[in-house]
Image (cartoon, rainbow over the protein chains, first blue to last red):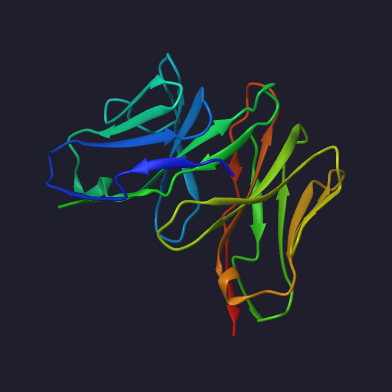
Length: 119
Length: 113
């Protein structure tokens, strides 16, 4: 299957600092990427949908000023957790949608996730 | 919006036995149903998917069945192996521009050697 690279895999930061997570589609172009948050032993919670060249669409309850998303190219989306606090500690996972050559494929591939620990 | 329910939440089977995980969905317009496997500390990996124009799809030891009338779909793993132990998530989505996935709550599968 297609490869989605997510970096870093693990980050520890001090409270009040900002952390940037990168998500890259390595062998296909992704006009749409998604950012999820996952708590231990729970399902994936969609945070926002990232569209190349336009503003991200945030799910209800997700602070857009807290979680900044930039999708500046067809292969890269970034999530910046601004002024991180301990309650932001979580496992963040990105995914990229592969539409295929004719736009009908519609398969989401996931990155390996980023474990964020805020001290 | 779409709601996906997944059962069971945990499943233990002996190595070599079969495992079945079931999901139901609420939105009759959903037409794409992928299954993901997530190992501890890793991102979900697509293992099989099915679209609404077929009732069954098989890939080696893994198969998925879809009943559109009843709005449920199932994952079947035969001849289970210890490396099949993981959390499995089902998901559903519509076609068209509204293509975001709605995930089930996950099933922790443990294959006992």
